[in-house]
Length: 474
Image 1 (cartoon, one colour):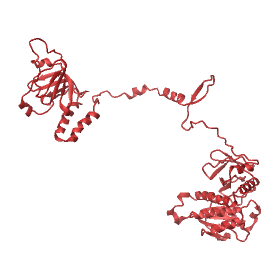
Image 2 (tube, rainbow, N blue to C red):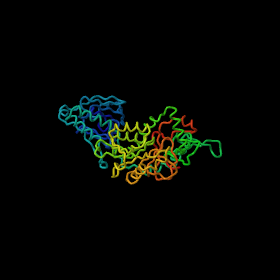
Image 3 (tube, rainbow, N blue to C red):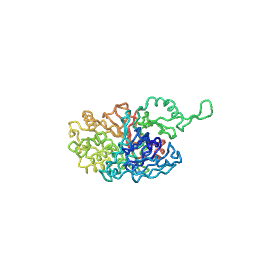
């Protein structure tokens, strides 16, 4: 009888589309040709439904995994009588203990009955998926093609194993309370680095930690006084990184330049270097890429060069030539009634090739403010030039014009500067500039290290990756 199979554990194969179900037989209905399983598993995964009912039309194969009621109850041969009578044609009922004969259903039923799975839904669960999804998959296969056949496989691969009936929320606060953050960070700070130091009481080494801005590589201590001079100019400066740069008197600076010329750093090469570096600084002061663009040619900056007939004047003319090459409108003031050095004549000849303006009198200078004034009037060798009329007139014009002033290699004598400069650019090493509001800069003119040593200066370059650096009063 069908009731003899209640409680048996069976495996029902419903084909590729619906899959395989296992569970305990809860009921067998001979009239409707259905079988029900309690606590079923679908393809090895626990179903969310407490009970599932199958129609005989959907069953391809049925196996008995365990039989509660032994089929050999007596010798009268009740084995065939206990076989369930709903198994369709072509299906096999197998057991790990006993093999049973085939029992078929009527052909008319097989041809007319729809392929469905009846389900018995528990009142306590509204979130179900297993068998309902299986039915939807089979209907999709009827109406679709190969793409529909792949969807059930994707669902089985990526959606299986999810327990959708979890009613209890995860306790984040309780789980976080199990984490001892203080102890973990204490361990990180104390033991994660390989840096060690001697213990205060024992010979052991205690590991130290590093901050995020510390270098983990051991380095030598920084020596900030890397330049020493035999004769101090009376004032010291420092770079942005803290390196000390002492000032030197003009006599020592003159010896340094003479030694550089003996080794091949001629005056012409030095003038070119000074012109490039000072013009680069002037371009930055004029606004750099924010001012000098192809779309801004109608607002070209104007620079006035105040130069004397000496080496300092030649340095300024070299700077003006490079500025003119960068589309800056340059006006050169150079008196023509004084005898000029050969270097000045050569620089004027090159400057004239830029098609820039040159004037010899102050009356020809602009009356309105310009963008920048570059002062190269003073001379180290002849301080008496400042007493001449042309010098005083040019200095007065510079002080009255409201443009900022850049002084290149100015003559310093402890007195107040004739031209009030906003920026002062020294060459190689700074000279002792008197107390002023001017900001001091230093230019690298390419003197090798051994030439510094030749005049008694222990030198390490403070420039880093730049050719012009700011200096601050130490």
